[in-house]
Length: 312
Image (cartoon, rainbow, N blue to C red; front, side, top):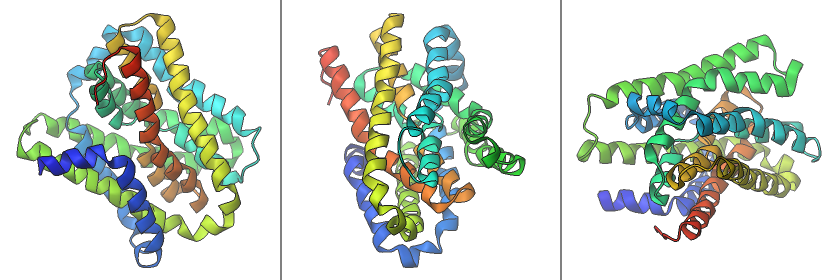
C-alpha cells in the first residue's frame, strides 16, 4: 500500500487529467451524484489537516516579516493584480469570475509536500497553510465583494462565508484536534493519505461531469482561459520569489514561502464554484487544478538548480 501511495504522489500530474476525462465521458450517469462533492471535500480537508499542529501555527510569529508579505500578496496583492489583468482580456463574465475565484483561494495544503520535496522549511509551510485557511472565511468573501461589488449581494456574501466555515474552517479545525489523538505514522497515516487522494480524484471527476454541459458554450474561450491561468500561476511564483529574495531570508524559508504564495487550494474553489456560482465558473478552477502541479514542478527545478541540490 505504501508503494501505491508513493506512485499516486509521483504521478498525480497524469492521474488528475484521467479522472477529469472520465468525468467528461461519464457525465450523464455522474451528473446526479454532484451533491457528494461538498462532503468529499470536507473529508479531504479533515484528513489533510490531521498532520497540522498548533505549534506550527505559532511558529509563524518567529519569522513575521516574510510570512506577512506572502499573506498580503496571496490574499490582497495578487487577486488585485489578477482583477486588473482580467480587464484587458475578453472573456465570458462567468469565466472571469472563475479565474478570480481560483486566485483568491487560501494556500493549498499540497504546498507542504512540495516544500518537503524541495528541501524547504516544512514548519513554515505548515504555518502558512494553517493561518491562510483560518482566515479564508473572512478574506475570500471580502475580496470577491471588492472585485464584483453589487453583483454579489448580502445574502450571497453570508452564504459564501457560511460555506467556507463549513467546508474549510470547521473540517480543518477538527482535523487539527483529531491529529493530537491519532498516530502520525504507520497504517492510519497511510490509510488517511490514500483516502484523501481518493476524495480528490472523485471531486475532480464529479465536477468534470457537472460542467460538461456548458463546455460547448464556451469552447472557443477555453484555450485563452488556460493560457491566462497558466501565466497567472507562474507570475505568482515569480512575484513571491522576487520579494522574498529581496528580504534576504534563508534558503529553506525561501522555498517554503515561495510555494506558499504559489500553491492554492483550488479544490475548495471548485466546490464553492459548484455550490454558489453559475456552472461555467468552475471551468477555470478545474484548469488551475490541472496546471498546479506542473507549475510546482517548474519551481522545484528552479530551486534544485539554484541551490545545486537535485532532490527528485
